[in-house]
Length: 206
Image (cartoon, rainbow, N blue to C red; front, top):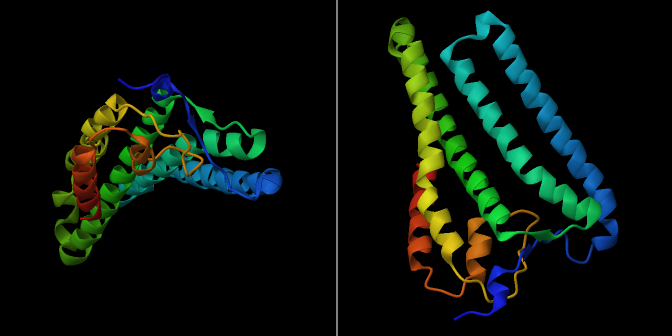
């Protein structure tokens, strides 16, 4: 039904019109990525090594740092690949997987921030019952719930995204893959994905 362009790889985009400056821009991005890796890596190391930090607040902070590292590791290869090496092609499978990780980790991050707010609410309103309310078992359950929410909710959207035919020019507007960017290139009825994505964005915000 569709031409062979449907299976062609996507093309990532850096900074249009500033291609000659990409090597210099990449240095700034590399410095930012390096600071994120060092900062969050140090935070995780300190929380693990210092037993006085083995408290719910720091566990949630560690989860937030790990999520930030995950987003960095997910986007860094393609961003630096485009800026440094002008490597713009990305296979559809790799693109869908990257989009899955980015959106999943974003939902996880919003969930962690919500949990951290709840943690501070308990600490302020019920300081004497804090340790009895947020036990280690409950913290583990909350953490697993946040992770499962993030990595499961987005699955239907990515599965349907991977099943669409793509007959328009495969040029994306970023140096990494996002659902809302890829879906514009689909030659099919995308109503389901649009509605689902709006619902997931609302849930992430709440």
